[in-house]
Amino acid sequence: MLNFDERTGPELGVDYPDVTVPDWYRDAKLGVFIHWGIFSVPAWAETHDGRVAVEEAYARHRYAEWYGNTVRLPGSPCRSQHVARYGEGTSYEDLADQWHPEGFNAGELVSAVLRSGARYVVPVTKHHDGFCLWDTATTGFNAARRGPRRDLIRELAEATRAAGARFGVYFSGALDWHVSDLPPIQSDRDLFLLRRNDEAFARYAARQLDELIERFEPSMLWNDIEWPDGGKGPDDFGVAALWRRYLAAVPDGVVNDRWGVPAHGHLTREYTDVEGVQAEVWESTRGLGMSFGYNAAEGESHSLGASELVRYFVDVVAKNGNLLINVGPRADGSVPELQQRALDGLGEWLATCGEAVFGSRPWRRAGDGQVRYTVVRGRVFAHLLEPGLGELRLPEEFLGAETVRWLGGEPGEVAGGTARIPDNLRSLPVVVAELGRE
Image (cartoon, rainbow, N blue to C red; front, top):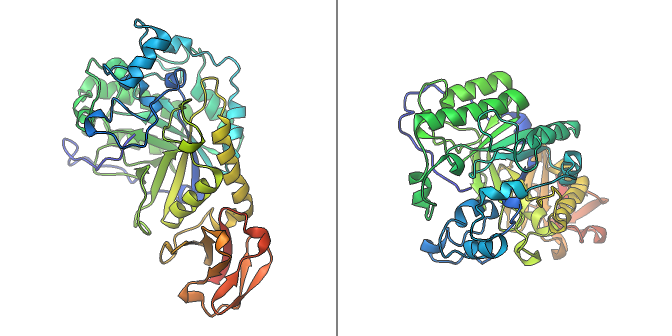
């Protein structure tokens, strides 16, 4: 996944439906991405600090879910370890038949990720490798007929809704290596050149997305990379028509901005920080480590801990964003302990401070120094990212306040515009005070 500017072209003049971001999404604040697929079998990508030559960026890709492309690049570290593990004659697609999550329980996976406090779950239904995780009629390259021999998306949808969370779907719209006879991608430029844009492929992608809409009525359509250019016109397999059918089935449905057309729902930013309160609703997405798919080569030094995750989340929310934090399960569907600890830490913090987050909107500014602000129905909250500082300096708009209400603690007095943080709250990753009403 990467961030792309919107593109225009054959879709000019097309009438798009209103995809204004609904309030349920703005209130939810936190979702969990689940990247699980064939790539979870090798579970490998090179770990490095990102400082590699541009011409080597794809050969040394840090995303494990890109294994199907990286393994095709001669001389790549991925290719070398693949041959050593599986042999020269084993292709990436052959690994589909080595994926056997017999003990997988969708309810257990959903329960594990929702311990984060998340309000929506978005699993990958088809990544760029073209392997579909639902029982599709469009291709035999799917989890119901190969490998798991189960409709994994149906199981996840039912478990998510049973747990009281919203269910969305990720779909790779413009890349499908299974039905493409193209060289491997070696640059960002190749990302748009080496993909199918013909009408036949646009129809194929539309049939798959229509299946997902009809069968699962997802609360979110999270498209990746783009949509084939052959499907950007006024046809019934075009983006506009797909959106109309989607909103007829799910009136409060959400779409993102990765369709390559001059209309969008929420914006997406991947492993990217933003400055200040954003005018449009946006969503930050990243893995807990450096990859979305599970990479067994990653350790603690590569991954966000609970405290870092909480601080990152608060910063995003203060800037008018949601966080879609990714979990990369092992091939058997279990959440790696390193990831689970971070999710649990976020959930524990939200149990104490969630009232300052869920349903919030940005304040007049995102923050001051190490402080971030949110507003919930007129109540202003200050989030101190470094509780160890021992005190909270109130913003100038509240310098006249005499007390603050500490979430998880007792009310505290204010002296000279400063409130002392109670000792029992200083171990929190972020300490929160209600300052008063706007």
